[in-house]
Length: 186
Image (cartoon, rainbow, N blue to C red; front, side, top):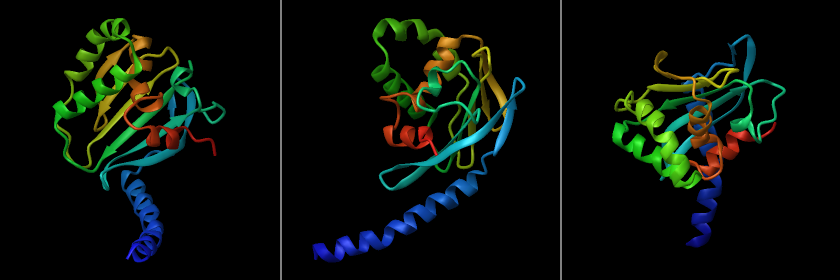
């Protein structure tokens, strides 16, 4: 019985990879974009799965010559885009963000970030399938948050910008597996 289960799982693995490719095609992430005159290119994209359910795809665009390992701390522009496949309540998104931030920062740092993060979170709505959020940091480390292509939040606070993209790109964020895929050098 165990042998049959293992063989079935091994046969299904190629289908899982193919399903992720189809999801990434559905997300239709840009191959490149320009931020403050600097060309950003699609470096990596991946699907976040939770309990065998596709939740969203994420794409990281950064300068082609920028090492990805520490991109969350780099002074150069970056663009992180999320394309959703499921409905998610606004409160669940905010709760997940705070869980990640609380793993990443001490209380003093969280207290200093809280006013900006609360303003950012105030712009959130319930997520529907095919919704798209993007976080773009420019060369001055200003943050632009877009929802379905429309800017809904902007901040010149570089610490806020780096902390928020760090939810996906720093250790102890939402998903280490997703972070590793986004930061993988090819």
